[in-house]
Length: 207
Image (cartoon, rainbow, N blue to C red; front, side, top):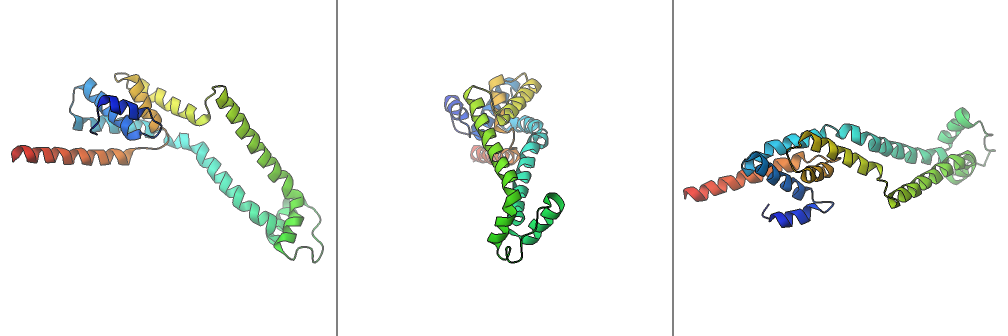
């Protein structure tokens, strides 16, 4: 990355500049370990792997939330508008009176019947999520970090403790940028680019 340290510092302060933060880490490793730029890849990959080892645990709550939302969202459609599904649910969990003959001929009529018991849980869940969103906003307003930010902070604390020889701020910024998303492919791309530059420099030197 053909940038000065000052330019790189400004970029690294942004939220979405993972490349800049990784580049700062490389330069810090060069300065502390006294090695060439291309030799920093091994240490960066090692630090990336340390962060990635926590991803399964970190992502579990999000993946559970995604699965629950998808399942609940799609399941609500047949449970409200599909007579056979709504009737089966009613038989096992509700035991309400079935609709009269002719009162469930269309999907809208089925919805009108099933809504008698589907409205309370769906409405309550919607209100609960609304309250949780409002509570989260107020927690942020008074300086309480949301769950994702706490995960990033834990990741940063862990990596900084594992590599105390490097600048704490640089290590923490890098850890936060890869707390939930690994940069394995980006490191591999960097390695190829570095190798290509070295080969080009050797070719120019020998010509």
